[in-house]
Length: 188
Image (cartoon, rainbow, N blue to C red):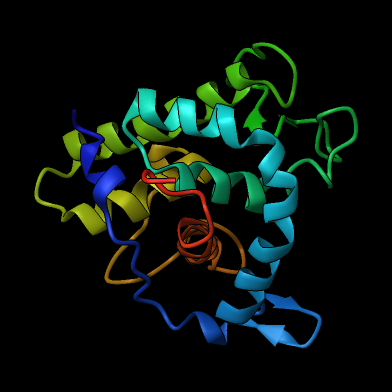
């Protein structure tokens, strides 16, 4: 499958994430992202079985799905009835409601499947659009595309221009690394 490299990929970050404004208490950068993942892993346990099943079905690393859930909704902790504050994104993975239908409950396996499918579709679109990119660029670009659509991708040599603070991709990858080492791996 075209997404198999995701399941085997060693997550890397190339930008200097410690210089971002991302903070948690007294931690910044990598340590802040890891701290959020450490806290969120407790809530993620409730969704581990569906995450693992979706990951297996789509040939994607479960840690990547779990990390997106952590970044997008803090595993539902920031949501009201499954919605973000603006009521434009829905569910654990914060799928844009304006562009996608809403299948099932905000925390259902159907929703996780939808979000992960959007991620894989973004990676496939980038593979078609940029056939000379490396697997690292496809991974980073796919994460960015999940957040901000394929047409807006600007991922070059470690640049992370997917959100205003330029740390979305690195935040997801750092949390995925942590989660991969703490039970959300293919071998778990």
